[in-house]
Image (cartoon, rainbow, N blue to C red; front, top):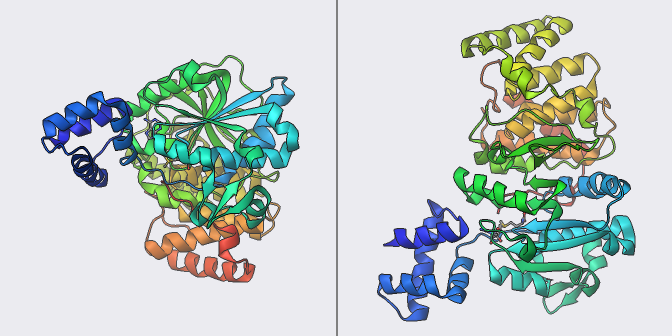
Amino acid sequence: MIASFKSLVYQRCGLHLEGLAESRLFRAVASLQVSTEITDTTQLLERLTNDPALFDHFVSQLTVNETYFNREPEALQWLVSHYLPERLAAGRAPLAIFSAGCSSGEEPYSLAMMLFEHFGERAKGLFTLTGGDVDQQVLAKARQAVYGGMAFRALSPTFRARYFSPHKACFKLHDSLRDWVNFRPFNLLNVHENKSGGPFDVILFRNVSIYFDEQTRRHIHQQLLKLLAPNGIILCGVTETLGNDLGVLELTEARGVFYFRRAVDSTPSSIDSPLPPLRSTNSNAENHAEEAAWLDDGADDSTPHSTELGLDNSDDEASAAMPEVAPQDISQQLHSAHQLLNQNAFAETDTLLQTLLEQQPWSIDALVLAGLVARWQQQPQAAYGHFKRAIYAAPECWPAHFYLAELYRQGELTDEPLQRQRSYAAVVRLLTTAPTSRGGLDTIDLPLPPGDARFLAERHLNALNIPLATSCTTQGVG
Ligand SMILES: C[S@@+](CC[C@H](N)C(=O)[O-])C[C@H]1O[C@@H](n2cnc3c(N)ncnc32)[C@H](O)[C@@H]1O
């Protein structure tokens, strides 16, 4: 019988209530039986199906609303400092921004604060901010804008002091920002442009898609496209990029931030750089949620542009025409490349890796080797691009985190102590959890022993002497 409740929720909201989520469903049904005094499950299901308010209440017990201010700030910083100013310069205002699955509002309010910091009072004329969620209870909380301590765990105390006032034991967002964000009921499975307030230039679809199966995600992409302005973009959470690279939307990268846009877009912006599909590798990437947290190392002006990252911009037809290489050949070529690298034959290694990456753009082994070669050839920005891509495809890739930190520590890239700290901390964390981890490398020998990497990372972290809490927020998924 529980299957019927499951299927009703799946049909209407797309929520996939398997595994741990199933126990939430059992609890919600039991609580419904008490509140309605209907013990017969057939009758209960019928009532639930026909009573929208009761269904809303039921759904609010099933959704995962985990969120907090300044979650995964790298993408938000990129929006505020680069993407949105460029769109404004192209002459369109106001730009419409939508947080799809906004929960209790921390995401759109975080953006509101950042936009206000960057553009001042005129931000309100330049941008409209909307939050939508299927859960009416969280929307009510969002409209109140009163938050307890946990919501602030990644927000700097300065921002809290600047934009919030004490309110009983909590903090209330100032009305000037609160009133800027418009919240409305919204179901990802069935969007109505008019009711949702679209079309939108930016849709934040972060830490939501993890709860849907692939078929539902595909359907949601189609729905989101209905809301997307012609040149608009969709940003997913750091752990969700792979799971959303389903062919409906085109994966794109700029300044180390990955986002999606319409697959057929005749007017690409100058900052866009389409990427080959991620699907071919590492399909279990969604399981790396915790490790992916460490991707959050903040884009900045020292971050190279996508065009400088040495990304493969060849068109899909060209790669489709390329003959398939058998897996054993790829593995042999990777071994050869590693050997050549150890012999300091950089040019030969580079040529071999370029061919390999044309075949397997998201091969972690090839990306790490390519990063190392670039580093030895004094091309730190190219190295940065390769390591960053390795981390995107395999957040547990501690060698990539390690060498990324080294690029900063050795002054090969303009030093960013906080980014350096995050990367070393990722190494320590990953190797504490799994001391013998191969960090997503399938084929080549580890470029340095995990024990040494952890020891060195710990030493460099101690030398940095930055309190972890101020800089290194552990980003998890909701
Ligand atoms: C984990 S929260 C993410 C909040 C925020 N985007 C963030 O990144 O912190 C996921 C939200 O998605 C909402 N959600 C789940 N299914 C939905 C659906 N079918 N339509 C709209 N929102 C949905 C949930 O109610 C929940 O508030």
